[in-house]
Amino acid sequence: MIAASFFNNPIKLKRCTGLSIAQFQVLAQRMEPAWEQAEKNRLLHPQRKRAIGAGHPYGLKIFKEKLACVLMWYKVYPALWLLGMMVGIDASNVCMSLLSSRNLPCFLLFSEEALLPTIKISAILQRWSTFESL
Image 1 (cartoon, helix red, strand yellow):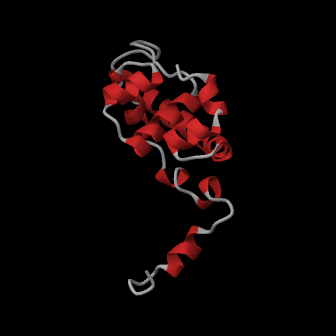
Image 2 (tube, rainbow, N blue to C red):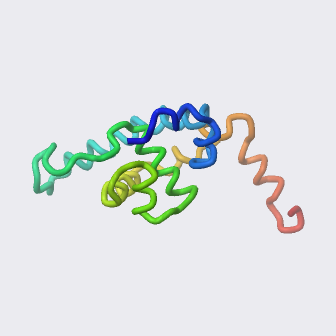
């Protein structure tokens, strides 16, 4: 439901997610397999009551849309109904996207290689390792 122009506009993407287009593309490529695996594990849960495919479909079908929705929530932290209006889906679908993202390994979101390929986070933390250095 998110317009394709959103992903091609560097200013909109940076303001809403905090990432450049290149950073967003790298993050999406790295996280999509983990997202698909987490979704597969959820669908194959042994205590599942409904058949796979039953129920209401997700409003955000493309992985990049789901990732952008999650990143917008982390960056802006709007109410779910407002985020739903921003991405063009119902608040319950936004909630489902956010809940399904909780099974992802967090290191994929905040890895040095994905978000800051030229700056080493460990070097930054070393500089500010003591209170006096701040």
